[in-house]
Image (cartoon, rainbow, N blue to C red):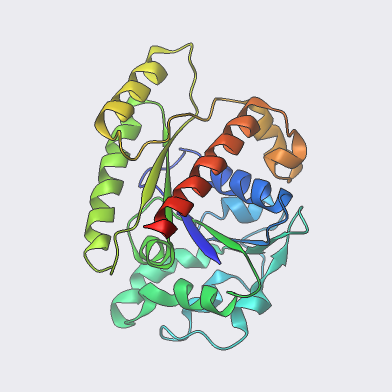
Length: 262
């Protein structure tokens, strides 16, 4: 299994959409994908038609065993989605309470890594939708992943969020055996605005070695897909945004091959 985390320390940049779009394209190609919703807001869970406030069992259950993960528990939590090749580990608003609990419970930083280890033979890819705050949930996402995708909205304030994210990654990398490779993905790009054009230029000038050469455009078809509860490629495989996400996936898979060779 390959594990990708989608994260940024700023909300509203397209993390959930990016996670689901990539999962949908991988599933479309025949890959088995598990998507993990670690955001207490539960946007990914809601996307697929579940209410994070009403589900009896969620990702929160994984954190209730002092850092251990009982055998079989991750598989028991899986929910179906709009695509037969995509399974969901759903979120709960109770995840927001982990920050208060974690000081007294060591070992919580590796819960998701341990959980995915139990699903290793069942899926080809895991994509983790991370919350926009640095804490035990984001640490879990980064500790479990082999590749980080950082969506960045092409507007000026988003650059500050990216700077914080890169700083956090540097801190996390000090405790990893190998640095976590990352790819910056410009999102919500509108070529008609100077804000989008200027921000894209800043991103490319500041992080040339890590930024994807393309961008995800503003596209109402993404909102329509969300409303329908299906992946963007299921809703409209020829839309501008899906064409862009296909190019992004190709880039990520190419980077994966480079990493494996290295």
